[in-house]
Image 1 (tube, rainbow, N blue to C red):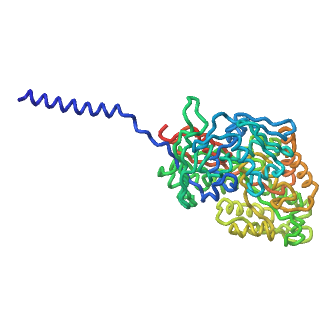
Image 2 (cartoon, rainbow, N blue to C red; image 1 turned 180 degrees about the vertical axis):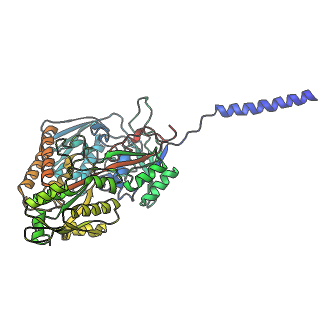
Image 3 (cartoon, helix red, strand yellow; image 1 turned 135 degrees about the vertical axis):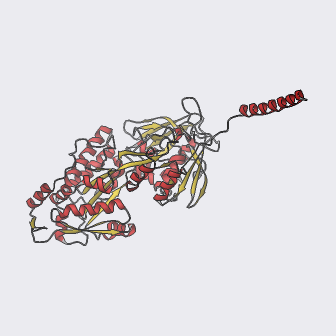
Length: 543
C-alpha cells in the first residue's frame, strides 16, 4: 500500500516536472516595443507636403522617408533613401542615387518614378507646399529620372542648405498621396483619434538595419497623445504613461527634477531666442520724438546695456536659460560667430551713452533733449510665464536709468494684430523658435522688404545703410558657391546686429527634456526633434 502511494506520488511529481519543463521550453513572450509621448495639439495635416506646424512636423519626421537626413546631433547631412548624391560645380544639378530594393510600408516598390512624382507635386504652385519656397524659383525647377535608381533635379540657380531642404520632403507613392498611411520612413499612421491620439506602427519594409542586420526600428508602435495641458503631460510622465517629454517648460523643470531626478536633462542653450525690439516703422501711430529714440543706435545700445540678462535667465527661467548676444545661438555649431563680444551688463555705461546722446536725468526720470520724459509700453503675450517675468525684470532694470516701462499683456491674436497689422505699439518682447540651424531659414526676418522684418516691416527700400548691407549679405550667402563664403557673410550679419541692436537679444532658453530610464539608445540634440531624432535605434524596457 505504501509502495503504491509512493508510485502515485512519483507519477504526480514527474507530471508536474514535465509540465514545468514544457513551459520553460516555450518561446519567451515578446515584450511590445512601444513608447508614448504627447503632441501639444492635433496635427493640422498628415500630408507631408503641406506641413507647417510642429505637431505635423513631428509626425512627418517619424513617418516620412526622405532622400537626405540632417543628423540632429552632428548637424551634418547624411544619406537616407538616397545612398549618395552629387552637386554640379555651379550648384544647378543635383543627382540622387537611390538604394536598391526600396519599398513602401505597403510592400510596393519605391523607384525613381515615385521620387520624381513627389518632387513635382511639391514644386507645383497649386500644392502650396511650404518647402517649395526653399527652391527660390520652384516653377523653373525640373526633375527627371534616367533610370529606376537615379533622379536628377535641375535648378535655375544654386539652392543653399540642400540637406535641410530634402530633409523636409517625404517620398510618397507616385501620383498617390497617402496622408502618412503609406510611407517610406520608420513608421506609418495606423490610427488617428482627433483630440486624443495618433498611433504609428513600424514600417515592416523599412530599408534600414542595425550593425547585426536586424530590422529597424526596434519600436513596434509609437503613440502620440494630444495634450495641451503641460501639467498633465508631466503627471503622465511621472506615472509612466509617457516615456518622454520633448520640451519641458522651465518653470516646471525643477519640480519634475525633484520627482524624477534621473529623468531630466538640461542640454544648455537651444536654437531659440527671446528678444525685445522697438517699433521703427515710419507709419506707426507713435509720436515723432519716440520714433527718434527708437531709431537711435545709441538709445538701443543703452537699453541693451541696462538689461541684466543674467537675472532674466536666473529668475524668469529658474536658471535654465543662457544670456544671449545675437540671433545665432552658440548651440548652432556651424554658424555661430565666435568673435562676437560677450554679453555686457553695465547700468553706468548705459546712462553715460544716453547722456552723450543728449538725454539727461531729472531726479529719477530720464529726459530727452526736448524735455520729454522717456517712457514706453512693452507688449508681450499673456500666459507665457517666462515672458511675463522677463518683462517685469526689464521694467525694473530700465527704471534704474530713469526710464518708465509700462508692461502690457495681450492674448496672442490681439498681440499679432498690433504687431503685424496696425503696428500700433512702441516695443515688444517675444521669442523665435528656430527649428533649422541654417541661417537661410531667417531670410524672411533679415531682408528689409519682408513683412517679418519686425522693427520696420516691408520696407520699399532699406531705411538705413546697415539694413542695405544686411540685404546684400543675406542675398550673397544664399548664392555663395561654398559654405566658407556663406559663413563670412553670416558672421558679418551677426556683427551688424550686435552693433545696431534692432533686436535686443535677451536669452537663449535652454533645451530641457525628460526621458524615462526605461528607454535606451536615446541621443539628445538641441535641434528638433531633440530626443527622438534617432528613433530607429530607441528601445523600450529596462536597460
